[in-house]
Structure formats: structure tokens, C-alpha cells
Image (cartoon, rainbow, N blue to C red; front, top):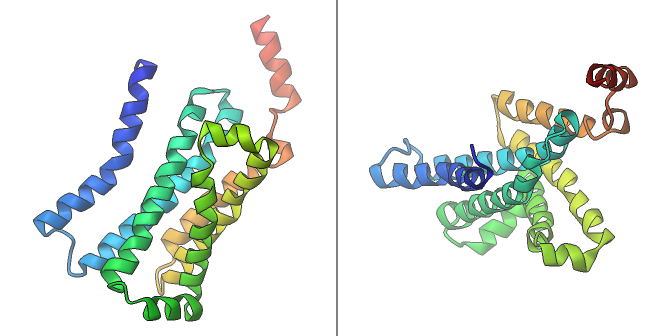
Length: 204
């Protein structure tokens, strides 16, 4: 597929979950608890896009492919979009803008506290995602965007604490996140020497 067509395809696929939710809402296919379905689905996709964003760099280092790097910013912004919609679903559909109840939840329910803190840390990453901000911040940009690691941990923890009985799905996300973090350790940054020598001999 031509590179020019890949970006619109990724853009369309990233919007597909949101389009499905809108369609399901209009056609009455959100189940017996529509508010929970919408809020939970948006949260799931927020976490998935966050993990996809974290997967880009390990994928490049393991495969040598550079083209996925072009989509890292887009995936990160979609993670922010779905996180914002997830929070909006809670504020608008669940709490109906009842701010005293929202503040009480933030203070008394640990999973909401963790989720809110993770969202607040995600805001500066979204604001500074442009090329202009990268140039202005210089090395500080990379330091700032390391917040993505505690954000991802907070997202997984938020999901785990939210689930009361069946924790299999949040544990799957936790395992994926653990693997992605381990792949960032120095021992995984470069291929083993044997592999390098074998590759050179093959090329010769």
C-alpha cells in the first residue's frame, strides 16, 4: 500500500470505535446499561491507544522499521481523545454535571482518583505534541513525555480497581504494558552480537 494511503487508513480505523458507539446509541444497541457501555468502551479504547503508542518505539527497535514512528503522535492524540471522552461520559452521562458528587468520588473512590490524576498528567503531553512545542522545549520535551509511563501504569491500575470480579482483561493489559516497559531496558535496545555477526555474514 502506498505510504500516502496508510495515514488516512490509520485515521479512519482509529475513529471506527467512536463511530460504532454513535451508531449503537442511535439504533439502541448499547445494551441494558447504555451509560456504562459508552463509558467503559471509551475507557477501553483510551487504554488500547495508549499501549499502541508505547508499542511504536519497541517495534522500530526490534524490526528496524521506521514508518510506524510517523503514527506515534497520532496514536497518542487518539489516546487523549478517547480518555477525554471517557471522562466526559462520566461527568455528563453518569453524574449529570453534579460537581459535589464528582469531587466526592474523586476523594473517596481510589480508582477515580488514579484515573483523574492520569488524565491530568496526559493533558501537557497532548498540548506539547506539536513540532513547534518540540523545538521550543528541546531536551525538556523528552523529559516531559516520559510521563507517559506513569500515565499508562495509572490507566491499567484504574481499570484493575474498577473491575470488581473478573480481572482477567485488566491483567492482560498489565502484562502487555509490562512487556512494553521491559523492551525499553538497555539489554533490549540492541540486538545480540551473534545476531549482528550472523546478519553481516549473510549480507557478505
